[in-house]
Length: 419
Ligand code: HAM
Image (cartoon, rainbow, N blue to C red; front, side):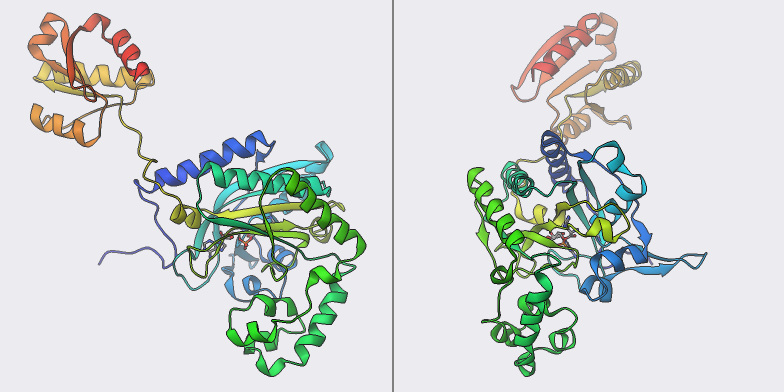
């Protein structure tokens, strides 16, 4: 019996992978122009890293982590997100000693044991970006301008940027208490999950999808009304800069993020086309996280986007596999050997060239050239080889000319680079 892959973990096959490559290349290009540099961290970390950063009472840590003991008995976890590992590496390698400001990005798989459905998987790919060392509201706005620009560049239709502020260590506890007081009076209306966590993580009740919880929280106090002066001033400035940079956004005072490290600005890029999995990208500020993980007292902000969700949303008609510049077709044994040598030589020179390797008829070779959508086909026969010539067919123009083999390479290079 054949072995199948693991539920919720997808193969990205040729044909689909071109869309992913396009999404990744555009991220590298755009993030690069905004001054971000790539960082690569392992897919496995000590479990403690995620418990301390994401938070013990979050869904991710409570139910969704792939955790195991290695042979030495250390508890390890497949990373459910990228921020904590990046900050761990930032602290460990003292990146702040080289430069107080670090703009970093990463691309790679994350793992969460969630119930798989459209747009929600157990292994999924994120592209994330983090800015460490700056708490100026200009940076929040610039990060969001970059994210919006990326969404425009890869043509994601119908997304809305929603922003909120979750306050800081000064104002959040006051708000939390007010919310607990409000929920206490409506406990009977809440689902069992929200009842259980209403004192440990009361904010989750605000974005619980259960209708009873939505109804019970419809008049709940909002964080925005409880922001301290510092947080409220910061949020005003973020909005002013977003207007100034012409980044459209909406304030969503009920937005709660599923990770505990957030402070002040939080945001989501939301779509109406993916059902319950409506966040295509999400993130926010985390001004306490670096110190909480044992690093210097530096602020940070970042986001991550899910590539599966992006790939589901964009029209990938235009993104196709690269076409070969040239297909070498041969007739006769001598020509086959000479053609194979020529093919390899051209590939080494950077021409994307192909041939049919198993000595099939000329007709079968031309069918293969058609299937690969080759731009040019070179037809080389034994007698032509003797005369020192070959036929070069331009498949898009449907024209053909005889070219001298001595001039062939130069001719091909010219033709191919003009195509
Ligand atoms: P997050 O909201 O947990 O944030 O995930 C960010 C994005 O990853 C989501 O908006 C979604 O597109 C994608 N995603 C999450 N879970 C899944 C899943 N099971 N299947 C498919 N896609 C998924 C974070 O991970 C934070 N680290 C973002 C961040 C960076 N905050 C600050 N810096």
